[in-house]
Length: 111
Length: 114
Image (cartoon, rainbow over all chains, first blue to last red):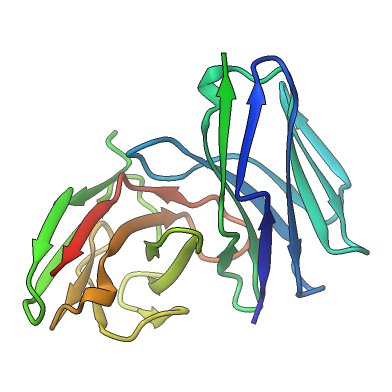
């Protein structure tokens, strides 16, 4: 089945710096790549997604890039703020069109 | 509009006890899902229901059963709880299954099995 690896598992940045989280996947047929943000004590919430027909998508301070040839995609957060501190999960749709999630990245933004 | 709600928020069980986790959504979604979240392992799909009246196994179904009671409600049952089922359980829903649909998650149920 689909295998999704996410790195790093923890990331600490200074407020105002950029943060990058990377995911690799195994199934070349995958074509949908969402990112979820999970705040403490809450369920994951979709923040951005990308489909395989585009290479990059931006929404204000967040962006996702996709390299289908290399089978990896990344989340970029610019001008980080303390409220960006959370756990971030990447996901990939698998052969059954369900989502397979990465292991998560705990992002800490230091004021 | 509450979105996806889950009860209870917390539960402590002894090994061998049974319990049912409840989930309801008010977004008129067709598909519903149950995941478990363990440290470092992301979310793993236990069962899902593509539409009212259907249920299918996910990645880790052993030890669990589900019931799609109606379009709004999807429950997860542990018949004989084991310590390995200590986890945080999330219910989610989407308009349809697959087809690149956004999944909306509930706040989770934290379960400890002693």
